[in-house]
Length: 160
Ligand SMILES: CC(C)(COP(=O)(O)OP(=O)(O)OC[C@H]1O[C@@H](n2cnc3c(N)ncnc32)[C@H](O)[C@@H]1OP(=O)(O)O)[C@@H](O)C(=O)NCCC(=O)NCCS
Image 1 (cartoon, helix red, strand yellow):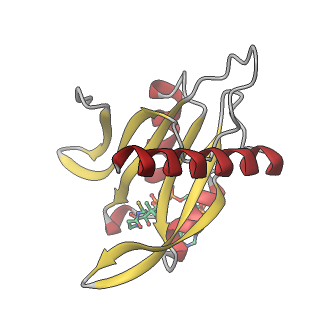
Image 2: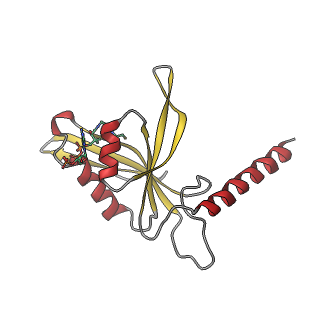
């Protein structure tokens, strides 16, 4: 399934029954600071896939359904993608174990990312680099942070 706004999905079925699904959005990485900046002559794509949601019916868990959905998503739909990333509630140990097993690593912790039942909850941003994508080195990260700050100042002035 693919929509015009870049959102796609895959479902896992057992006969007529839906037992799992994954849904993601493709976009160009702009200012998240997760991918190393484009260097001269670099051919690494700036396309990233953000996993919006992944879930498996309780009765079908630990049977490899989610691993297979992610595998198919990567192999069939993410050829020109340098990074898969997503957020997970910091208390969701099962999902953290699952994603780490699938090659994702924690990139950062984000405070108050979710609003659940009126309460703010923290999240981890997890990244899985592929097709030559890599995280910024620390000096590149500093440059990105400076660029973001400069842009914010510029836009704030422009808005006056
Ligand atoms: C997280 C979730 C998608 C995993 O789905 P799944 O089909 O059970 O995962 P898999 O069977 O492919 O698991 C692959 C590996 O992940 C790890 N893992 C998965 N569930 C785990 C659990 N409950 N405890 C510990 N490790 C777990 C294991 O290493 C497992 O391999 P193993 O079974 O050979 O030990 C499923 O638990 C789920 O739907 N949870 C609720 C929704 C959710 O939290 N989604 C993620 C946030 S978007």
